[in-house]
Length: 446
Image (cartoon, rainbow, N blue to C red):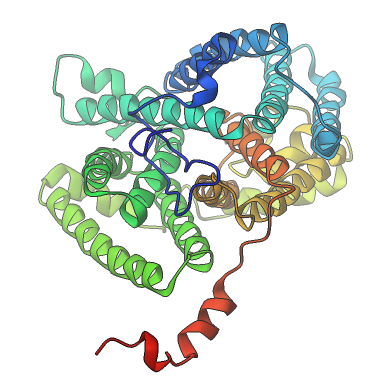
């Protein structure tokens, strides 16, 4: 794979670096006709993830076609190491199905449960296909995700600034950019992984890649800020911190760590400058002040967001079979806005426990994938960091039907499965010892 073309470094190449997904030559394995078709389908499926106006979305249709193509060409192998993931997802979905029986008369319940099963299947699909030909398939998926994020971001920015007739009505909600999504609170988090991949280009990429990454990061960052989603802002900050920390620990040299520190410092300065420019626009400044205030009326009080969580947990403990899907708002006027609580409310103790186990196991698998030396290690770190932020954000919003949550879960398990035979890559202690060791006279320049 050419240096300009890969998202992930070439196996076995010394000093292989991550590349920003968008341009370049195909992976050698893509030369196979059937594999080339599969990679194109993965890419198109992820682009479909940008359009989430209704269910089923283009992503659902693309996923059905792609899964069918992989099955028809014999490209899916369910390895024994995936059994824990399959078992937990099966238990989670069975819990939802059992608890839905009590409210089956409601029209939206059956489709909601069916989508939950479908998303679980897509998770297993992503994990299974990444166990083989990991590099090429990750590259196709993340290139598609990046294109999708740019499409959604461009729509959100166009809508917010009314760049063409009807743009504001189509691509904003309550004065907040939502792009091609139904909700600004889903739109913002969808941009995080491509942003992290763009940041990585500054740590390792050549000047041309850094310029391209800077342009992409600028567009996505403006869109993220204009979503005015506090959860998305926190998600991005937390995920960026996790990624930088993991890259710092696994850096190959002290010089690489020093470069990271300088780039992060410069990035913070540029971010503050961008925020200052946006705040110079009156309507942006007004909404920014409103959204940056964490003392919102709908958050506080006995029936505010966090008050509902307290009552909800008490109810969850008293109801082994929960209330059934989509029932919480009938008791508390608003949706749960806490995916961990909602797993108990919608699916009872069975689904609640299973969902918590799923998140815990995925975090462990992600950490395992990050600390293994592989050509796709930087990408695994970015995916894990994004998942960490999304898992945290789940405490204040319902993410159980966010497509990209299940994609991230599958990517993490797939990377962990592909990395099983790779050596551990924890360099921190060794580099610290090297930094303290004085150089011999023969290695010191005159």
